[in-house]
Length: 281
Image (cartoon, rainbow, N blue to C red; front, side):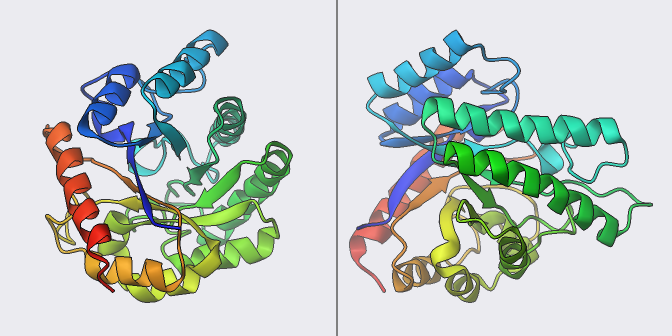
């Protein structure tokens, strides 16, 4: 099977509704879509059962495949952290992720990403990791029941000190002991935090379930068009083929300043289509 391409609505969250974002992604030529589950997009607390059915119907009408969710978290959702210093925030975080599992089950999304969350001064890394693992153990029970994959997502170093690279995620997988826990690899994040792309992809191996694809200059935390930065995409594709990866590369966009998301998504697709069709190894 071949590596496939999806597109996330995240980049449109500041400028377009979820529904319009899905239509734009289809118009660009994508055949699969990934939904951002933070407001104002598919935030579980805001979308009723009828709203959710309408989203599913729109995706079907446009001939798209739903490949996953991108959750709010890290720098884009500081209110969500498994290791928050306030118990109330930890409960809100756990409920948000449980709601995402139920939402994924309802819409037929196979997976979504897990972000470990911000850790404030005064909370030790040991304390933060313990609280996080306790929450993940609870989520695993529901994920196994609903058959939804939890994709551990190594992050940009300024977002969380708990899961920075594939080694950190593999340690968590070993502790959680569940087939429903895998790894989502984010090229833009790792281009800043730990850019040993090929070795990390090989380490992830069969645990790799999804790739968040974007580019940047290796300095600024942005998600630019694939091929427009310093990410070694030739090497990444070679490594993915080496481990027989047959999942999705989900293109993403995020910028500190307003940008033309349609162009970013179109350029990413054009670059990936060319690279994947070239058969380069």
